[in-house]
Length: 175
Image 1: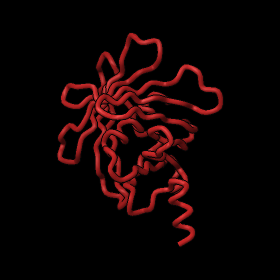
Image 2: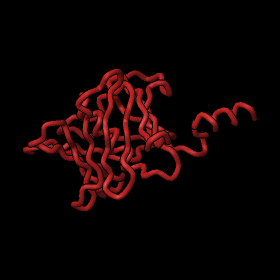
Image 3: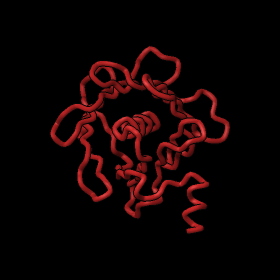
Image 4: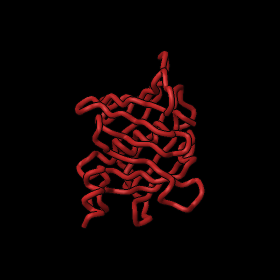
């Protein structure tokens, strides 16, 4: 009981309060298809890389082939920016911070909700996505022994598709 109380004070989500997904380190490659698996190892989402486009485009689909969101690179920008769209509307814009003193830092401007901050070691897939001081999701390799695999742990009540799309976008922009 004390261990659980300490975890709650530190903001560590309990297993029943999170959704976990497994992603491959080299998940995103324009022109190639990839899958995101759930905690049970079942394919949950399909990421379709569209080749031969003027700007980088990824389609994020459910396993029935329905498009859940579209990730597109914005060209004419000083900073790297990619938009996440649903139904033709931009729901989030992911930007890399210009100055990063110690850790990688990214901002996610969410259209209909609070903005998200991403901090940590992006290249090693060890980072946190949060709303201010509240952790929304964590990306880490420590949960898997398989090489080139990392996990995304999303707090209950969050938009899993949006958080996974943010992780995919950051992976694509960083690599």
